[in-house]
Length: 356
Image (cartoon, rainbow, N blue to C red; front, side):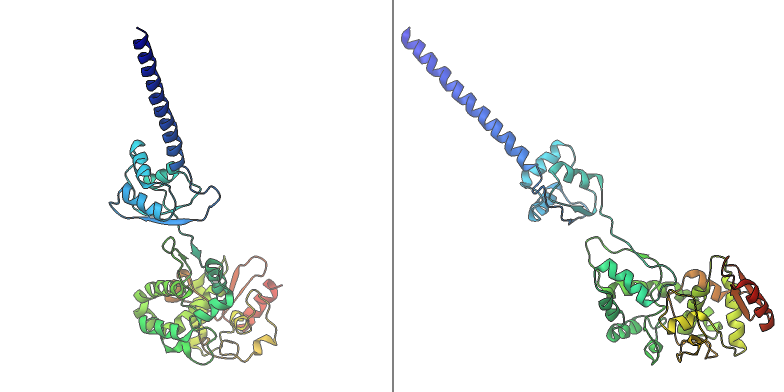
């Protein structure tokens, strides 16, 4: 009997050891599992871009995540996703970082929380230096570096070859301040998430947009007896002269009437452009005497090139001018209302009344 009792105690001891070992393994396994689904680095919030292709599996995604050091263990990550019943991936581009645990990462890819590319917005009426400032902020480059790339003759010639109906050698003639002035269309642009487009890639997107807007109107532009470059110069004047209360088609009619009569357009905005005084509206008698192919007080035709970009509103107004016999216009300095006149005498009377 004593032998059997000793043997029984020994058996119990073995069972206890085995059970203890199982418990230790379970606890160890649990903590290992918790570790493998935890964040790789709780302090590193650097954005990492991951692209999910159509039909991609959770297993292949896990391998990619491991390569980018975003998860600890691909196999456990995959089984964890199956356990959560979240294995259907949505195609697209995503941003994740190392502070995210496995659950957060899985949720992002399964729910389709795709990355949104930052947008570059170029407002209407900006000139090249102002546009360069916007691109500079977007690309984190210096303004001077952006300007150098926009004005690079090799790039400009490439654009002339690629968009012959839009850009011609006229943009490289002597006297032109910035070759691509007027050709960088005002709009909001987005680029693939994670990409870092160059200045020239961005500029070409804008040129493509201008080409897309202008090309359908080439025959109409011919009827105005203006080249595309002259037409964009014309629309840029409309853009800069416009106010919230402006009927652009009426201003277009004034410009066309003056051009037909061989009268100088006498637009202050061309003088300001020639003098690099963008941002001010004051023009002195000394200013209007500046010797520049942009100064429409001294020439009886359009400036040598555009002075800013142009909106579709200005383009449409130039293509569909009002039929008037006006040769003058001015804006009330307080209300912004625009007044038109047929004669200089009438114009001076309006100026005395509305320009303070």
